[in-house]
Amino acid sequence: MNVSIILAHPSPGSFNHAIAAIARARLMALGCNVWWHDLYAEGFDPCLPASEIPREAPLPHNIARHIEEITTADGIVIVHPNYWSRPPAILCGWVDRVLRAGRAYTFVPDGKGGGKPVGLLKARAALVINTANTPQEKEVELYGDPLDILWRKVVFGLCGVSVVERLVFTPVITSTLAQRQTWLSMVNEAVDRCFNTVTR
Image (cartoon, rainbow, N blue to C red; front, side):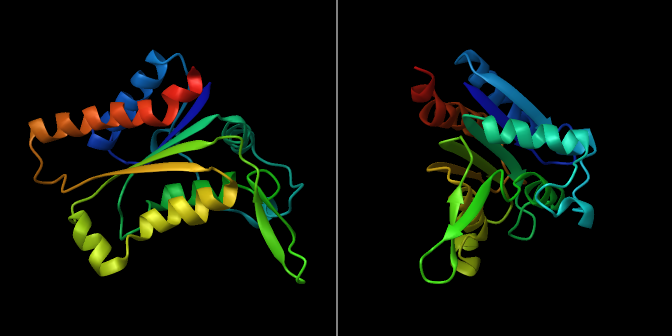
């Protein structure tokens, strides 16, 4: 089983990095092949140039590699902090450049003069893990939890990933070591729920 981990946090020693490392270790213990992408460490360019917009456009090698991996992955793990109720810009740009029309999704006629989306990703399970400093109940109350809508409905819903689990760890800024260890245990449990049954 191939699982792609996409990590988007600028600080190498961040709790997001610890989360992603725990997820990778657990996936490897389950016998999965893990494709690891720390977008900041890679220097991923989030800007979508006009030259890449056509479906048959020639693509830079690193973008083509990201696309090949994400379209053939059996599972996906996304780890990022909550920035203004959205992912960091580098991850938004990764979605723009990598989850391309014709590779991650397409549109077919809906019989009413319009089109309906059809997801093309092979993955049937995705795990999204977010950190934040705003209590989650406030995020839901004030903003309607935009990140859940984005990942569950907009991104993975469009691209055909049928099982999406999301963990939110907050507030990180005041968390204790014991709290973080509990959260990391929850990451292991979520990896098992999402991916262990697929590897059997």
